Amino acid sequence: MSKIDAVRSAMMQAMKDKDKARKDALSLLLAALKNKAIDKHADLTEEEENAVVFREIKQAQETVDTTPADRAQIIEEARLRMQVYSEFVPKLMDEGEIREVVAAVLAELGIEKPTAKDKGRIMKTLMPRVKGKADGSLVNQVLTGFFG
Image 1 (cartoon, rainbow, N blue to C red):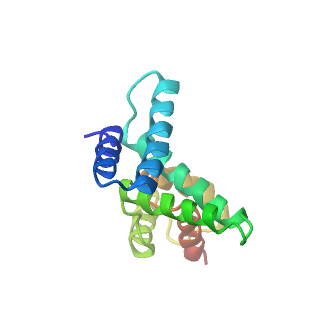
Image 2: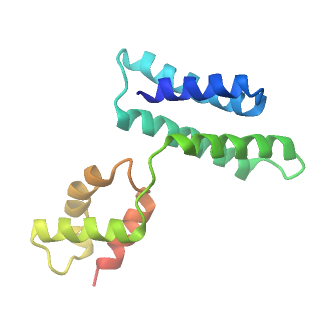
Image 3: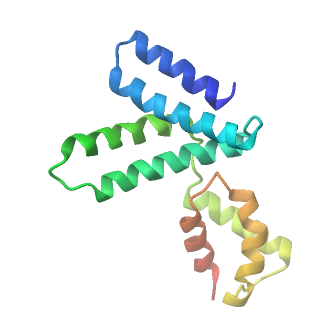
């Protein structure tokens, strides 16, 4: 089942439950997914669908971060959107899982003691393996921890 179908199904359930706030959040996510598919002129891959959902979560987080504290309703709506959207993304890798992937990449590239010079080469191999599964800044932080 594609994310579009899953979101549409959840939206229908929210309508049946008369949960207007959840329905509105799902409606926005559905629109973002459909717009991306229209722009691409084809069905979205799972990675592309996840990227759209992550982007929507990030935008909602930015709304929370930049909205003045006296605008509580806007902040609450953005938090609800983030909560609803997080149901549609895969669980992100934790630091330990990322460390394992980094160690595997280092072994594969034959690098025992990585230096800052090796970072570009390592990231080129590493990022396709963790894309959409891990936070990029956390991956960078874990990799930096391997430098001697």
